[in-house]
Image (cartoon, rainbow, N blue to C red; front, side, top):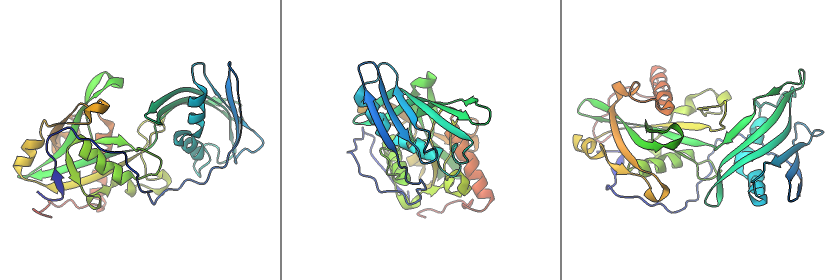
Length: 309
């Protein structure tokens, strides 16, 4: 077996990590002028964006949001990254035809000491018509997914995870994936860590191919899985390796995940030729499209791997 280490079947525990900063980070610096007021009946904050300096934005909280959660929401990387995206080159406010009037913070979910999920409603209006555009936002930030292809005895297998997904009400077969732990942007490091946690194999960063890096620069080299309601932007990585048949046997049905975090995961291996019809996971289908097109364009090799390569 080459290119990775198969870890023993056990419950994995990982300490908190400081992640290096990704090089390709194109957000401009966001300058905000803020004024905050609070009372027993309301929480509000006024912010001024560089793109509309004469039109302050009122940020408020719905009933039930504590003052500390409200402050954390305003200061969170999730909210600030959303504001940066509004004013980016392809942002909604970039050409001045639209304006952000107010934001209502509706929900804050903490992951330990940091905000994991943030839900808010943004009132953005088209200046010419005065019409408001749909603006309910579920913010969860950047994430990664990994397409792992293992070749053995003339067959290529995709390595998937079988997980409980409460929002769907189903057990879902999907790519190994996960959210970035902070706002420093180490996408490839997160991808390697998620594979180790969810699959139980240790990959090398230098063996990972960023399939989303082949996209046009206008995309920011990310995929938006559900842009109608969620800010999540995803990088999709590829790993290819050749292994013995025994490794395939050991991985199939292996139980992994961080049980103390509520992860109950089983590893499933699917022949790649059958992958496109075996799951409804959008990450799987997107990764197939990226991989196949990258092969067609000669950006990744389509040749079968040699042992110990």
